[in-house]
Length: 488
Ligand code: NAD
Image (cartoon, rainbow, N blue to C red; front, side, top):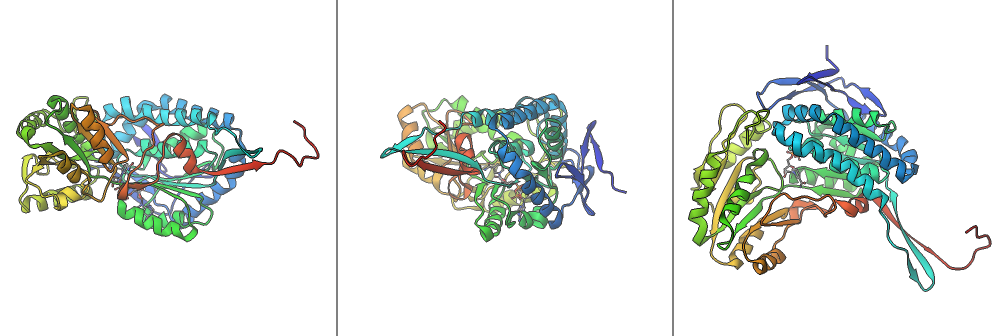
């Protein structure tokens, strides 16, 4: 007998889909496992193509009324969702940590407050969204953002609720209805979000959640003729499949994908700051798309940088992500660990040297690792590992630094440490990246455009860019004459 609700660290989580304002069970389930100890959390609904289609149908049915709901009312409901997130912040934080193994303290103090902020920000932005009318030979041009329709949002496991709501909030604000498909390795908080949204007064069918494997229900969602937008965060191979599937109806896509971002450390940098930025790249056990996983360090300071990095990395505590003192938790899944270990083994076989880590630990834990003596064209420098594995290379000129930084198929982010403002401007202008951080890392503002260049993504979301994506933009040109009745 399958239990429909799970008790997770004291919280009650419904394991079924949420479709048209009702819980819907699947005939099949899959087992959700906690990366903290490898223990089963419970059985989750394993969606079928028919259930995915039912969720799209529910989103389609709810769309006209939600699209016609005045902006102020949509914004009010989104603020009520944010209130609900804040009210249940502790519960969301512990459930997310149990499910994906990221640090409880960062869920409490950073991630879940940001989830609430996602709703507040896009609710407020909606209310000020406008383009000034303009004139063409006496005719008035008026630009409007029309809701586009049912939107399929597909998200990964590394920051489940944060990344889901970064899409859900603007899509709902835009007047679209949503089918959310969370990752199968961390499905729980999406279900809690459905509860919170319903309590906040979001009408039935406006937000739907379908659980399950992307390989089994992905196509049913992404090739569906009634879906008007697809926003995906995940890996490049999955993005290719989604793009091919979406091609059936030319459904517009937003793709936020992987990275292999550089941290450039120039000899004129504040070295303590550079080392702090470098050690930060182990955050979330390296499962961060934006992580600067390739250190490029100017030759004269490379030895000293490495010495200080090794010292600082040695002070990090790895262990149970629920403990306040833990800096690095587990990797999400045994398959991910195998993948990480494979990358490191092959790099070591090819001549790399592990100056930090380089091996698995007990359970789901991989030792924070720094590899040197790596070639620019090697797999470990070119491919995303998505674990606590960093590489270090040196350079001697600014040109070489830029060449190495840009020499991968990705272009998500880049981080620079330099004491020279003009150099920062010169180098930034030449870097291929959606986000560049100068002497800082991970400062993110929701009004900034966010996305990747090259194979790190297609399109940008954030601020007005999100509304540009989730809406059909319309320009209405009105002649000054021709009126037989004018009520104005
Ligand atoms: P993934 O591509 O394996 O899975 C992501 C989601 O896609 C999951 O929900 C999965 O079920 C679904 N999926 C799988 N096959 C599908 C299909 N055929 N059709 C539709 N959906 C399908 O990625 P992952 O391993 O969960 O996440 C890690 C990746 O995400 C990394 O590459 C990371 O860099 C990237 N990422 C990018 C950003 C960003 O903002 N650019 C943020 C976080 C993570």
